[in-house]
Length: 277
Image (cartoon, rainbow, N blue to C red; front, side, top):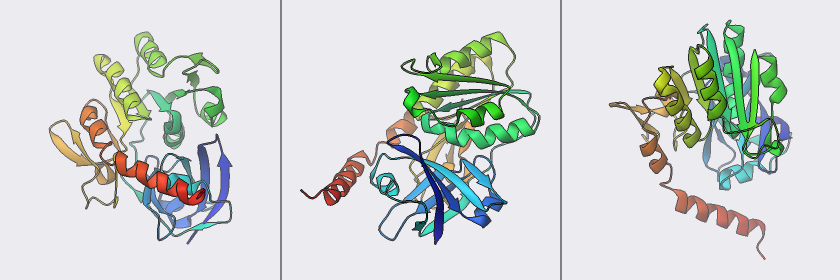
């Protein structure tokens, strides 16, 4: 059993768990993920590690309640326990002094960008962060990003905070103004695809963190396969970081919709049980 030591709500649908998991915290590296299994009736949910502290023995995950499993997770409080947390899984992000690196986070993708940003800054990179949200009410971890960013840009879709823009606009501006050595973009698939298309004409290596449907997380089920150029990769063991210029996003977007009907049915049954009348 793994204890949830802290819960923090960022918005009505976005929240943070800090989990006591000393072995995972000791072994975790930026870019890796865990699979959380709350109880014997719940699904196994893959979530990127947003932070880890080997001294405290804790890991941090940020969750957006969207389906039955994550809705159930919202009901947990500090002091509650979950059945299993498997990890760290996946390949760590490549951390070197690349020079000037732009790190782009969109919505929930801001959380997994953070440990990569911190590691790159400590490695000596010049770091520029761009974080984007739909509105001011959804903004989180602004101060954390400023702590490890030489330059920090915040945008919102509606202009309620920071610049009114999509993350691709300041990214394009930076690419046109100066020499950028690497771009790392994490967020919704459509956002990562857009970032990759912005950087493609400039020839700047662009890393994205793919999040396909995943079952076992160890490469056996094949559910998380991704077409990467002429190859087929598995996000759980070959990723989640992949070359954004090679990922077949069109295929990935289609495959992400395979179980939408069943996800809706499962959520509806969950809501009915909570509110039987």
